[in-house]
Amino acid sequence: MTTASIRTIVGNLCLGSAPDSWGVWFPDDAHQVPFGRFLDELVDAGYEWLELGPYGYLPTDPDRLADEVGSRGLKVSGGTTFGALHRPEQWSSMVATTREVAALTAAVGAHHLVFIPPMFRDEKTGAFTEERELSAEQWSGLGRAANELGKSLLEDYDVRLCLHPHADSHIQTQTEIERFLDNTDSRFANLCLDTGHVAYGGGDNLDLIRRFAERIGYVHIKQMELTVLAEVAAENLSFGEAVQRGVCVEPPAGVPNPDEIVTELSTLDSELFVIVEHDLYPCGPDVPLPIAVRTREYLAGCGLSGTKRPTKR
Image (cartoon, rainbow, N blue to C red; front, side, top):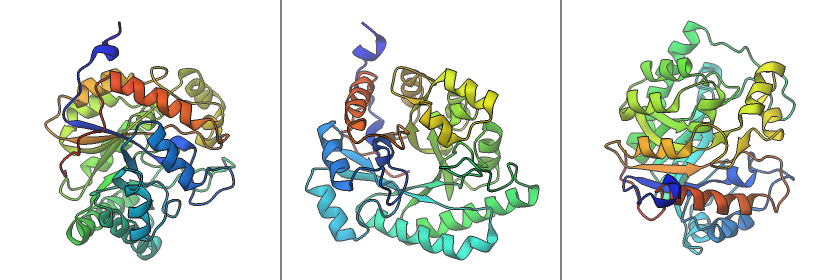
């Protein structure tokens, strides 16, 4: 019997999932399942908590969203948004969009906003749309912008900004993640630790958890397949190309080891949502549910349960 199969429930962690695990990357796309099917299958897979995913995929009217979620016995862990903190010319429009998402997140009782930086390669074509590296001036501006945005979200909506490192973004490698944390104020901007994207960028999840425990406000748990990661490096693949080759895999395959992640997170003096993500876009409509069921069952064996709501952090 494996360690994962006999683990008692970890008290400080709460399991959920997200539209990403159903192949949803965009508010509207012909390759994605309708939101009603996603919500129904989320329940069928045994989850109680969900992250909202790209703004506009689920209903944006607070009353309708609350009804769609609540009628199925589901609860919301946090919202999701995208924005370029390093582009001052987009500040006003980015803030306006982020505040819309934060307002919706708060309206359905959630207190975390996962903030995803833009990719410097097109999600569908892989073409480069921006320079790979940020300048020192851009890094400085990014930190100031994150602090200002996070402060306003906290004061106005009681929503906490959690920056999500992402493949093919300027906050991908461990050095870049640490630079973001060094340049920001822990009162206003912290980390959504995405274990798969950290591994994709060559980082060490366990080291980040140990050294930056107080900066981890939210977690996405996923695994990356080592053979495809090697192809990414050898062939200069974009993240979209890597996903189509199957870089994201269900546990216990791939890296990092989810059991080790859960063990390390369980030592933290904080309560955290741990949200399953499995990058599948594009995929057939019948692909996600069996993966979601197996993933929940495996993570339950690691001690991850979805029955307790973490306190705000």
